Length: 165
Image (cartoon, rainbow, N blue to C red; front, side, top):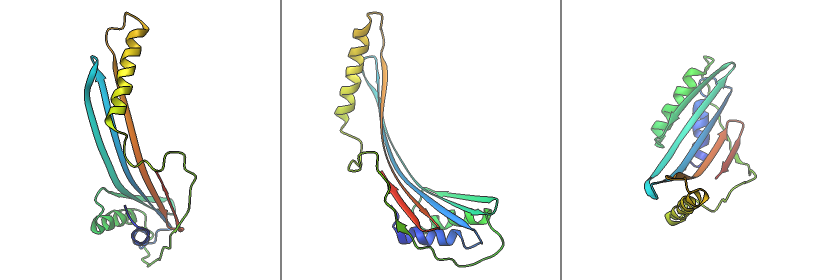
């Protein structure tokens, strides 16, 4: 995604109009869905969401800019938009030094993509059989399964950088 130097430059740019605090939220999310209808897999979907949000705080004002384009020019526009909303009229250069902080992980950190499709199909087929076996009045089974892998990086102007999957 974005390296710590790029994130530090982005935060410094966001603070250049007098912001007191800035943070950046970077996300990469993959969502896979399967839907069972009438005893068969009816449709599937794969969605990828990526983007960077920049927030600047100045007193009671907060500005927010967002980009799903990771080019430096697009990131600058997002930081500038946030800085324009939350400004105090002063312009100043401010360096940001980031240090990575480890956070406790709760999920499988090794998995970077959804599981193989056959795993989801088998689960939906089992759900179909179980529902129909439960009561003879069951005439239709509709089921859906989703799997999502989300990676997040958060960088703050006070120097914190965290990452979690």
